[in-house]
Length: 119
Image (tube, rainbow, N blue to C red; front, top):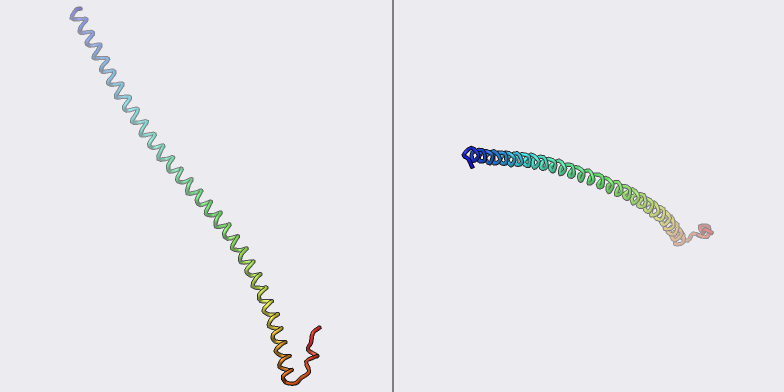
């Protein structure tokens, strides 16, 4: 092998080594760019997922509140009806008590109460 051939072979090896280093460096840069892009996309997706979770919670809370409001209105309606029934019954009992009191009052006063009897 001649010196020229050896020099050319060394130059070729050095050139390949330089090309390899440049290729590795370029690959590192590309990988870093991909990682940075993936990291940014991950952050965006995480933010979107958090927004979706918050929207879901708002919708569910709204549904729960609507259901609770409807149930509260039903309970209020039933309570009013029950109170109205109690008021009617109280009025009836008051009338009966007043009537019985008057009859006893008149009887003790010696007044004939047969006219007060109801059929």
